[in-house]
Image (cartoon, rainbow, N blue to C red; front, side, top):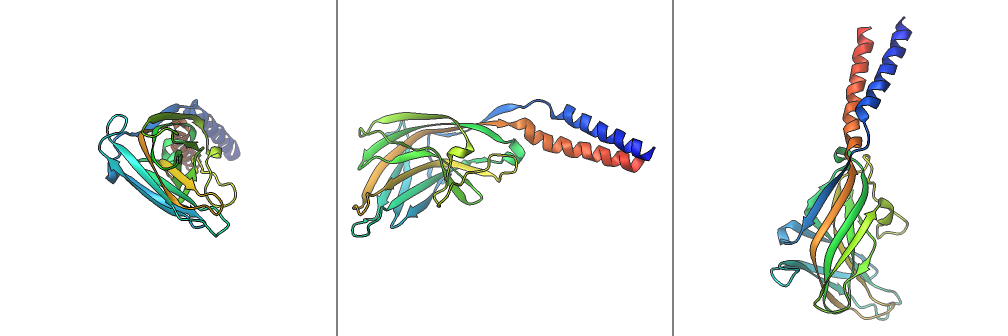
Length: 239
């Protein structure tokens, strides 16, 4: 009888879990900024070889249509080194933190921004995310070739496998419920030619937007499964 009760409770636990889990619940979480207040943005610089530096700040006018963030990437000269110098700037939005453990796994990301070439060469651009201290860079595009014009770029259905860290080897973020909190922002990068001279590129960004498609039901299942196990334990104790 004791074993039969255990089997019955196990079956009840499974049935309750299936009933409480329900279908996938896709929902959208949005981060966006078109003002770029300096207090809301921080910059982290990563380099290869001789690297360089990054300076970024809000400009009150001249954006699309008003304020925007100006990015200045300065490359150190690689003349006489036989290598190419690279600088990446990760610009993190303070209001752009998402925790998949509580909100559910990320199924896909839609990204949009307006970019501008102000002076110097073009800049490489893209969505970026930091997780557990590692910065992952999304697929690249370039600021427009024409000066002082704004161009809108959109990227749809991005997944974790399309992001990679600067360190050697393929590294991807974890968008599952097992993943640590994710800090979203954008990146700008430049490189010299092999043995080439340095210099500074000047660009701008406006109307930054990230839309996360997440499965909120999966995060909810973690809680309900715990509740079901509690019922099971109570049943075992009561038998």
